[in-house]
Image (cartoon, rainbow, N blue to C red; front, side, top):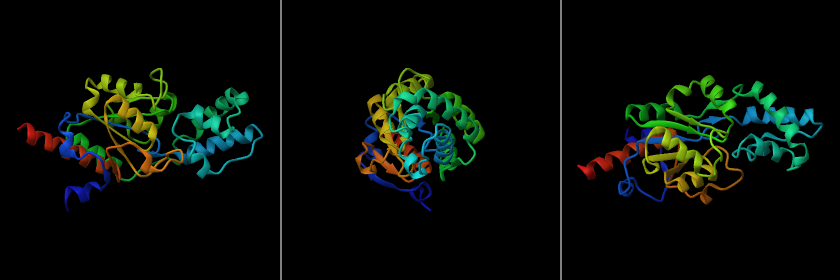
Length: 248
């Protein structure tokens, strides 16, 4: 079986691994969390609907809430309220209380994540997690799902002053790892990840699953669409191998 078959397929490529060596080898991969590493929409939807019931409001379907995920819990709650900010503070407090109970209950690791992490660790590539989820939820969830041990840095939605799609979280993550942004690859599922990573100066890959706030994947500015994290790890391996061949 070829490395491409083991690692999945690149569905669309705007920059080949060989062309990428005109930059730098990849020393780190920065992953989004919800919709990229973990399917968490079930837990988020349960907490959201418990919040809506507490407020005396109609429940929403999980498919609808899926399109609310991506810009942090405050924005998810605001969207559940149809942007009625008059009750936002109360609603967010209620949501956070319920999400502490629901977080991790039905969350699952996407196929290919653990295999991809092992590939990257074996190649001595650093891993980071950059998410818009508040730190109070991020770190316990990573621990609960057995993923915390893989990450050299974790940047949550309240770690720095601005969240994705601002590039600040990725710039901060690279600084924490002691690398240049051009030495990092961002892997995510939405425009938040692609736009923030691109603005930070990172290379960017998108997975075809996850949560994109209703946007078509064709609209995203990424270097490639890969099947899963395992395919992203194979991409990194090919980039670095090609760089070594050119440099050597």
